[in-house]
Length: 333
Image 1: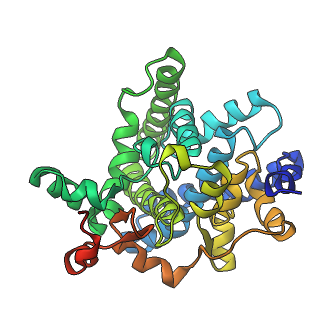
Image 2: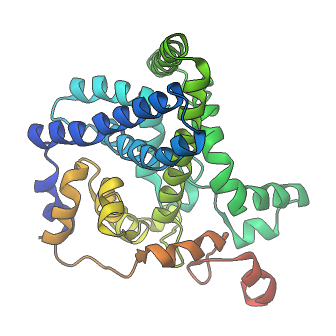
């Protein structure tokens, strides 16, 4: 039995498990946010409140995983249920459902394809493309791939600002309506908290929580597709199964972080079949045979991956700017 057939039985939603995840994810997130507002309201020093933004931010990441499942129509068996819950969760994670779904589906259909880069992925240039680029484009690319910008500035800007703007990629009424629903939902919460407790309460809680969650989320996505031996092929040589297994990492996280991130570290399994809900990913991984584990990334190993910048087609791996400068073999003839 091939791998795609092995994972297929796990691509089934379970109402009980989905309900439990709402209870152990959405409810704690809302309670943490409410508790922080309460702490500010009773006048405790802000440094006490700020401590709770860390667990709240991590729970927001987990809420996003549920949202992510809804966009893949995997959290519930019925499409309508996924769309309704997805829009509700989209408000909590500052992301319009239909726009993100379309963008992310393109990512799933093109991951590892050198000829279809640019949608739903991290901008990655080949060595040849970088060397042949203008000085301005090189400067912009270096700025974009700078860890400080990529992980500490861009994520918050993406979720807080860019996700609020009208979509240029998807101009259908469905996508724009989804964007309006999400923005109105966020505005409603802002006004409710503002007029009930104070606008300062909302800003001092939601902004740091969103910042922590967005930084964590972008980091996760980066590690899932940016490692040394990552799979990149031109379209004629590209293969879906190969791209899923070799173009996605197995991010082996400690138990608590694995739970918080909804087992999305089993990203190669997720790309094999995105209809597998997050609560089945670990079970699926343990049951399948014949999957290559050479792309396993541990927590400590993952930090050095932020230094990888360019894909070398000749060597079939990502390299750093330092390697490019020192190794003349990387320069295309």
